[in-house]
Image (tube, rainbow, N blue to C red; front, side, top):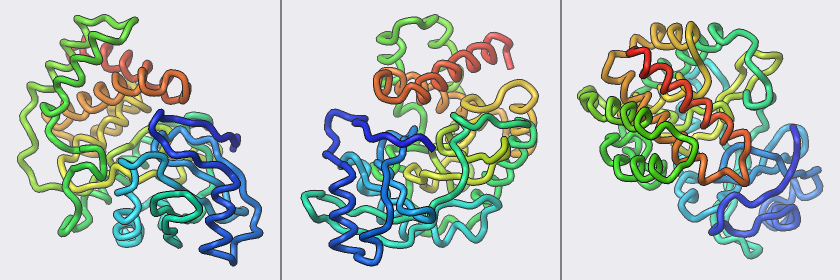
Length: 305
């Protein structure tokens, strides 16, 4: 995996190799001399450093990402045994120190490359594999799980709460067919809200959070969006990764009803519109997938599907 350290947000704290080494030396001296290097990640909320061959250090870049740490330590060990693909279960929790103000984590290193750089060989098979993962996640008892909120950036809340931000983004972003994008967003808002019981969602099923080896999905990472809510949020991967037949396979495997499918399309559109201006200078892979997502949604909407 390509390594690089770069700033993603104007309000993020400074994180570099020296800081991470000092944190490890002070709090986990058993890993003080293990080789350490920064990892180029498509995610925008955490900095990741590979620790030897078997571990990774993950540190929130901004204050709003800090609520994920305790949540991941509490819930990922409980969810992992029930899922058909590996997920990162934390092995240690760090505390503030050495000038770094927040809690942080050490995770096992999961082999594979994000599908942003490791293309999927068979998207239909990937659709089946990912649908099994989503279905298994939804079947886990949600009792006590966190409802949408600041800890997961509101992933899974009603789409109507994103309406003003989405319309502002449509008007501000150049290169769009404003009328067509607005029509697609309106169609998503018209879908009835989720009336079923809340279920577990990953909340951020994007290509950068899916790992593959030799073109086959091998793991799902980055559970900062984890919560218990409307399952539609996890359907946005239908437009961020799949298309045509593979999208049909994904929907059929999930047995998604029309309203949930439409809300999932709305989540994908919101994510794409917000991501492009936020990461245009810092995350080219994410921006490329965002533009592709908008194109997929517009083609889908134009076809009346």
